[in-house]
Image (cartoon, rainbow, N blue to C red; front, side, top):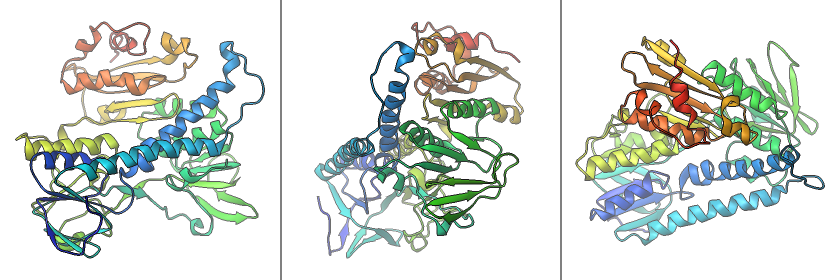
Length: 463
């Protein structure tokens, strides 16, 4: 393992970025007998390990324990005294889990025979040359896995007030008195519920007419019901968001159809999107094309506009999820090393919203299926009619599936409710196998589970 060099070095491949796609690709390449340079300028593990999935889901778990402790009496369990949250302890637990994962990746890469690790900022000198500090690295194969970062929105007054993003909020070890979350989508809503359960007053401010606009209306409405039932204030239709300092508070000005025109908070979280880490790589010197938003343009096999250069993960705009980044690795490795013909267009869209209870989403929404011109059938079931959810005292949400009436193939589904992020995979697997919905409908599932009601729902499809 090398962390710095002043000499020129030639490798079979260079991997820029040690996020979710980079390290496993390095492992496959060195196993195939290649020499590989991997370059990481900051933290090994990328967004998922350091500022995404791992720390946020660790916070979600801590918040869920606090929430359940407060509900103990509903289950006949007596807890004496007030339920308190030690934010320093919450952060320490999160930091330990993150560090263990991050260190494991760095140690793994450093122990690989044939892999040389460079710590520093990589910039292209040409289509086959990358400079890291004083070292000039050469390779005929270069893989870009540089990830993304929070987008700073162009809102009036945003530069004049202190703000948080998905990275900086993870460093808090004290509880915000009133957290204003700007952006009513996946990242913002997870933090909103987490901090409400920790004890903050929370207001979600969304420019659009409803939360998570990507989802069907009844899913959005059910998500809002879950959040408001826990005391989170939701303000939608905020067309003109602006900020100013007022004493110790931060004022968010709104232009909404209903409700007060101003909200005062102690902290502001900006959760309005992401941008790729591509603006400081010298891509122009390599001839690599990017689109108007800075995402690297790739074909169906993740090759860029320059032969011998590939882009994987968040920087290519093809998924922006950990699981799609890892699938990018599988596509590239399969095509290069295994003689396969794998394509990005073969994968089925899937993702989760990890509020509690969570949303598992796969394929098309009903709105998208109707817009495609297909003749469809739809099935739905509220979680109040799922025994497992009722027994656990967590019956909020619903499940929904959309089927092509002619081919009988499942087009998409959403399960918003307890275990929804796991139960949806049975539907995803059926779709991946290109099997008719009757294959899943006729399967015998274990009772009592959430999954057992999916065949029932499929048996009640309506035009």
